[in-house]
Length: 194
Image 1 (spheres, helix red, strand yellow):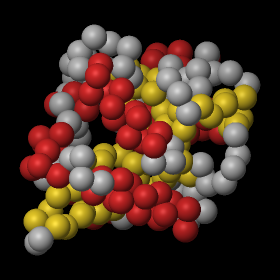
Image 2: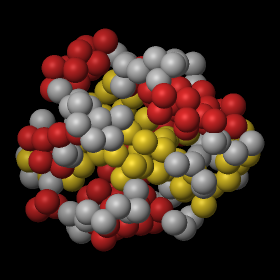
Image 3: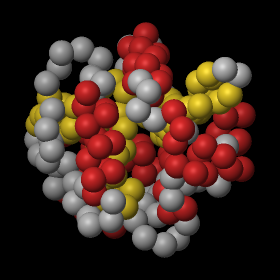
Image 4: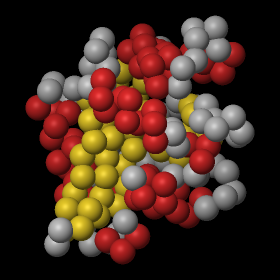
């Protein structure tokens, strides 16, 4: 859990007790990568019962192991899990639109793009604050199950609604959720560039 704490800011991190409860319930699974008997990367996958998606809820590699292709291998392994279950792998990734650490955010997005992910084009997405402070502007990325190049408004709307309700304990009446769903295009295309 130290990798988890070191890799994500407070407003994007669920409490450790929440993670433990989710793991015990079976809705979420923890994967770790080990190198020379040391845990060097972690991932939490969230399984939606009613959707054709698995969420890569958190993914992190220790600072010492970044740039050594360990993260790429681990990410491809996780993508394979989603594929083997017949699901798309979805990620919420910080948008580089803000001024804070935009180079690091672009690097993270490029990491996913270089490892088989696509950006869900024209989907402004907001991650609710997990500590009651500031929400985070995000983009949604996906490793599609097949060569599909679009998702319907209904698919993306269901996905965002499930994210807000299941992961962030929001209701269908949440103002941010309603606003997000209102501006979705009828067809959501996938893109390999920002």
